[in-house]
Amino acid sequence: MALLDFLKNKKEKDRATEKKAVVLDVKKETKTVEASKTPKVSLKEGKFSYSVIKEPHISEKATYLGDENKYAFKVYGNANKVEIKKSVEGIYGVNVLAVNVITIPNKKRRMGKTEGFKKGYKKALVTIKEGQKIEIF
Image (cartoon, rainbow, N blue to C red):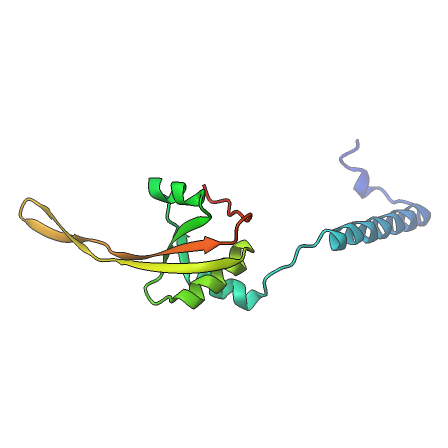
């Protein structure tokens, strides 16, 4: 049975050739991986980047702005323009030309007697260099 072959005793010569073959395969794989490496963002920048941007803001207007190299993101309330620029450049690997920030306030909502608020958020419109693209949609 082929399933239980590992229980049989193999000769030492066969074992030695198997080990050599595995080592050679690993070396070949590492060479190909090193050649195709892309520049990575350092771990500090990566963690920082994701602590600024929540998610892409997807709406009809935002999709039209994508044709003009402008992209919309929901960001955390304490984020400023400089942090937003660094995080977009770090995550997506593009050159940011301008950042515009909009704070959307809470909006009062009612259902019968009960009153509440629709949650507000902060939105960033990021303009990137012409010819570059971010795949969001």
